[in-house]
Length: 609
Image (cartoon, rainbow, N blue to C red):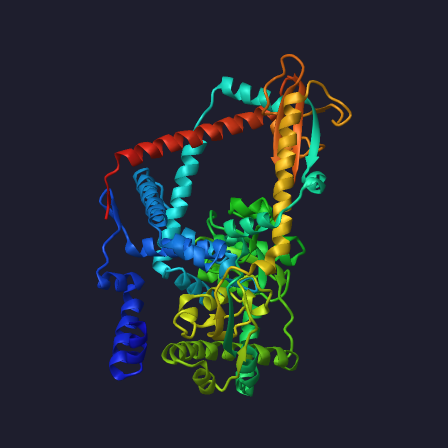
């Protein structure tokens, strides 16, 4: 079906269809195409539909996670299971219920609040700067357009506010706080004994039948990685930069923009004396100007004479002169001052008569055209190359979509066709670091359909499209190739069984501590002198009544028998009491929120189709 569509796309009718789809997408978003297809909502929650696009987006994301974790073959079985679809739908239902609860409780987040955070998202950046193309590509790859993504982020931010508000408004009783604090302050006298798998390996005898049985029962452990070889075309940004032509007139224009930017970035600090309450404000201002000429300081006169109480006590200082803050007469007069300490003549505004002094002027010294020429030329080349690359990217996407062979694409763009060696999902290859490259080369589009990938963009601005050369799915490796590995696994498993048996025997027969045990040590819950699993188990054991309180814990290739000889209760510190109060409040708030959500879920009108 898709191939037939691709073939049709090369003719006039096909281009008309593609054009209609593009127009629909641009003006109405991706969801409109889904609506045209007539897909029904998979579920309705209190009258609000869960969109098919949200369902497919989350389902696709979970399927990709499974592929990454378990490989394509096993993931394909899990991905199509009803359990996964039920999990995804249940998650979306819960999200919808929480969104409705957020709206009911009047928690809201504006578009502006969300937009302000986008520039700080590392995934949307190239070299630390927000990149619009990267943003759009990531959204598209995850099934979003700008509007749907902003809506989702607003909903999530409001939900977070609501949850935090409910949790933080909870309270806890003094009794529970005192109990938590006492447990946190408690100390214990502890000793332990260590066993290790390595100590039992010498006692293991592995039979050939054991190896074959393990191989047959655990073949999923001996799968080779799926591998792919691809050919690719790379349009290099640096080549476009090198070919970009820059004229002397363009450099001159860029230099003038540079000078204007420097002028716009100057910082002026000014002071003023305002005369507004007198019978003759102009005469009073002129008298003050005469006193300034006579040697008195502007700051002293401002403190004495100014009718602006907000600045008078600071010697008339207004700080930095900022556009659009002051009326035009005042701002223009202040901007006309050129020397620090220079004072205007009388300036009349709607507020009265002013004398304005330029306190300081900070401006960068401009470089000459000759000094800036190389830098400006390079900047112009890069700008032209970026603009051209936008057009190239669109052409490359069209050509890749309509072509069956990457060689035709390379010919169109006068580029070379390169190829990789075998690549797995974890290969340490520079191309694998390109955003979206690994997903593209292992996608069904490239692997199953043998089509050319969508356009990928590197951090340097290069464009890449790929096509499959060869593919090897994951497969069970031959027994001979993994026999040594199986020998180690079976031996370790049998040694672990011997260690576990010894652990149980020690637990049953221990009545006192001998030289095989560590010295008794007083520890708290944050002790670092013992393995963390030992500390955790020690505080989980019951208080000893007569003698020892014993327990065991296995931790990988080690196991421990733990003995608590005494529990020491002590008064908690202020810090421990505060920590206990915070813990109790958070725990209580989380529990209350869960109760509230369970009630909302139970009362909800949910229809699943």
